[in-house]
Structures are given as C-alpha cells and as structure tokens.
Length: 226
Image (cartoon, rainbow, N blue to C red; front, side):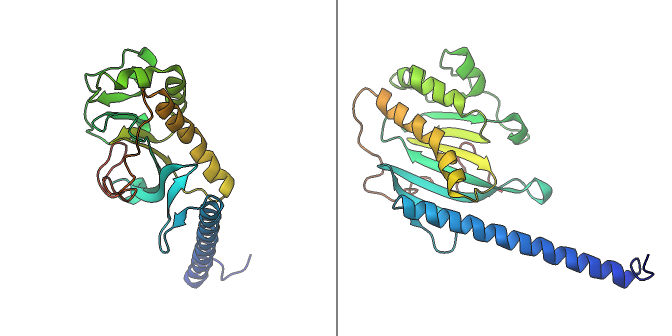
C-alpha cells in the first residue's frame, strides 16, 4: 500500500479525479440527449429550441410540445422530468380536468380526491376528475380511450387540461428510440379521444403558439412548481 494514498493531499487528489470523471460522464450524456432530440425533431419536421431541450410542431398532423423541466422542492428531491403535450383538437371540453399521479410523486399536503367520478371503478381509482361535462363522459368511457388511459398509469403524471393531454416521466430520453417510445402510447390515446368525439373537431391551437395558454413554468395538473 502506498503511504501517500490516505494522506490529505492523496484524498483530495482522488476526489478531484472522481469529480472530473463525473462531470465528463454528465457532459457526454447531455451531448447524447441533445443529439437524440435533434435527430428526432429532424425526422418529424419539428422545431427544436437552440438553447434548451424543447421540441414543438406537428407530429403526424397533431400539435405537440416536448420539453424538460424541474420538479421537486429542492435538494435530493429535485429532479428532471420530460413533459409531453399533445393537442386533443377540441375533442374534450377545455374545462375538463382529469389527472393521475403515482403515490410516490404526490406532493405532501396535496388536495384530497375530488367528488366527481366517471362511474367506472377502475378509472375512478386511477384518475381524479373535475368539470366533467355530459359530453365528455362517453368519450372517456369509450373502450379504446378507457384502455389507453389505464395504460398510461405507469407514467409519473398524466393529465388532461385545457384540451391538451400532458404526460410526464422522470429523466430525459437519450435516444430517438426512447423518444418514439415515450410518444407512442400518449399519441395513441390522443387519436382515440379525437376518434371517439361526436364530430370532427377543429384544433384549438391553429392560431396560437403551442404552449400559449399553458406554458411549462405555470402550475399545471401533474406538475409542481419548484
């Protein structure tokens, strides 16, 4: 055993080397993430922000916003999430609020479950609902919509608000395959919702930026403002 290994200078040198390795690893990860998001945006004709991880445009004809954000009160609890929003094109009333949050991600002191229900035991145990207009109920209970809603329970948070579907997951995808996987189930749900609506709806984002009504840093269902 070398005598200087456990000396103060030896410990400091080891910590500096370890810190440099951690920083290099994080830098490489950030580069892979950025490259994956740029490739994904290019493949689908989407726009990507120059200085932040944010992609928006029309994905298979549907307005989309994909971005990263911070959640948590601070310290070890603060973490990065990837947020996906898809326009439901007016298929559900803008006043409808439907949300799911995994128990481990709930904010301490959060509101108690709401009184409104869909009348489906499995959906009502997974989702909280407000502003349930009569025309929204048959859309949400449509077999295809119901199945896909329940299929999103594994995500950190899922919500429908203001005519948009929002899905969050922890971490940042670092490959185009991971981004495609993130979009697949929510996009299938969005298509099922618009398909179950009584009439072909007009997009609610035709004349406005994708996140004009609900920017990422506003308090939203399924998000917490740090």
